[in-house]
Image (cartoon, rainbow, N blue to C red; front, side, top):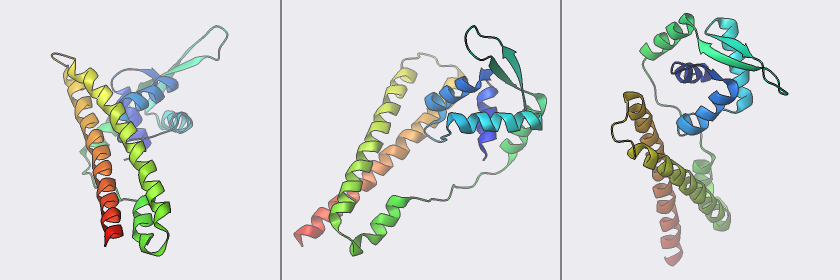
Length: 180
């Protein structure tokens, strides 16, 4: 999957400015796709050249003009083409796993420090997602689009919880190993 497909998915809801797309990334898709505002703007330019999006310029007083992007028929076609493709699991490239692999050859203190730091980071992300989940749960009869957003949020929550559980497993191992 490319960043462009995620942007097309966001624009399939409604037209947005580049800034608004970036905010939607933070609010809706950050649990499974990360992109900086700069990456989004660069991709929007490329997508506009491919005819997948178009924009309308909206003048703003005292600020640069705002571009409101919309998905084109060609963009909808590309999104449909991509959607029909089978998906493959994303390869793991995780520094922390390599550090755990190397742990027998270096001081435990460094690994413990990193494990605690990462655990805190995953706990913070999980807490943020749980706050978002509470907003979804407050909707009595959510529209279908919100139900699918909720499902992707739940996957992000499980991802963070799995990291916390695995880090706890490594920490328990290290504590048990100290006692032997």
